[in-house]
Amino acid sequence: MWQHYKKTFFGMQVTILIVTAAIYRYLGQNWAMALSMFVTMQLGAVVGALWGSRLSRKIQGSTSALPLQPKA
Image (cartoon, rainbow, N blue to C red):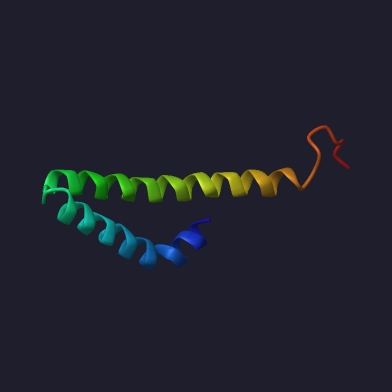
């Protein structure tokens, strides 16, 4: 999942900056509101990548063997 995050990093950052600029521009030019939305989106991107990585590891680990299968 980190590979996917690295691959989409630039596009995600551009999108976050555009949304932040739109929030600043159209919601009364309030820096505090725009900054809080920027930080929230950054944290969401990182937490989403961590969560996706964890799910990917769980899926790959569960297909290797059954949990009660005897070891050879």
